[in-house]
Image (cartoon, rainbow, N blue to C red; front, side):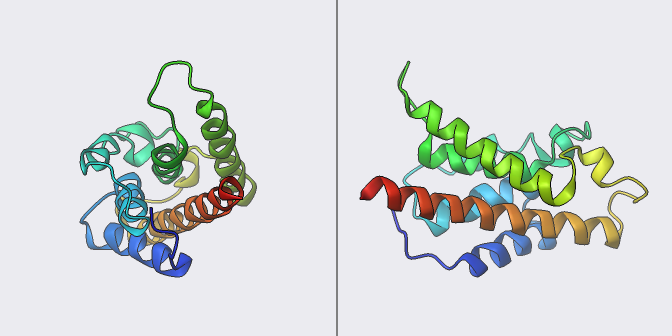
Length: 152
């Protein structure tokens, strides 16, 4: 795993994936984190993030950028074996990411965050691009911080 990452580059890369239309929010974050940290997981993980955009399949619920950040944290801190206590750390860090977003934006509901905006409008796209970069950067910051603690 590579820890020599540039947090600003992570933000900009995730934003560009979304802006260019290559990936939606959650997919952009997962791909960016996977590549930046050189995680040895299959690109299938990007596909696993494909159902989360626009509030989980366009349902307007939990922001896909937050979901993508949670998936990214799970790639690093999650468990693969039954009853592995690593799940506690993954959940704690996911809650931290959730709380960061909620404190800054007051809610996680895609429908509420995009209220009074036309989906696909430049205003809505600008906001969601920013959310994507923000959550990629915050997830990366958490990964760096907590892996450093773990390695001490």
